[in-house]
Length: 246
Image (cartoon, rainbow, N blue to C red):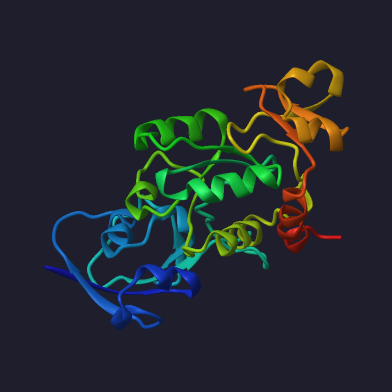
């Protein structure tokens, strides 16, 4: 049996039981084990980790743990420079696109309302989510820690909050999306882009009161759903303004 000491820093403690939070603790194992397998066995997805130090030297996720190693695991860094160590995370995706798992349907609608390219279906299998993430260079948002432990995933994030408005705030802060908000530019049902359309072209599709009181309309380029700036937009605008940087 081999034994190491390990500590996780900052928000990585969200994945640990109380007795292991913010402390260095012992971990025993047998056989050959990579540092990726070790941290995920403890409960932390590799997508949340940006730097690992073993005996004060940076290593990659394939490093094989040795007896008596002392390990420090750090989360994604946003505010200071670590160029001289091995960063484990790929560079951020500069064109932010997302795919959400089955647990985050309400969040998907909020993100589309704010204009973020967001794929979501309530019947997506995990394999499909991973495939689309890699194919389209989308960050995976999930409430399933197990999904983020898949080796193929390069960009993913575990959403901590369960309240939808707090979730969207969390995602905006985590991915620094304040300047990417383009409210009411996407269909909240299918993610298609909205285009302006003349009222006369859709008159037969409009409810009587809408025909009478509204003049500006938009249509989804994908599913053809029609939108107008009705009274509901006022409430939605409050959500938008809460997050949009002026």
